[in-house]
Length: 136
Image: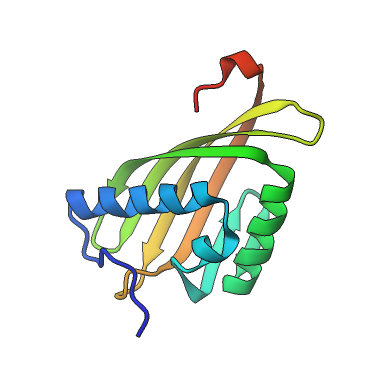
């Protein structure tokens, strides 16, 4: 059976590990790598897009990173319970026209007993920035 450590129930230490693992995976910008942290039937809301299953995750992330160039993400643990974690995040990217943006948001995650994320709900806002204002 597929597992992704650490497993719930989470402690402060293991919740922080889970958040860091997610940040590291997303910064690879490899949709296949990222998708392995989710159940095969994962359920997402990303802004106004609803995604179901790993295949849709891979497709969504492939399109995302074709549009959001020079992507760099930072996540921070906000709260956790037995099998849920809330994070705040920001990421920066450049669009096809060369304009820079910083996206701010919150995610709510729910994990199954094997440590795979079965639900991910993300609320995200974008702010255009100057290249000299980049932090990441």
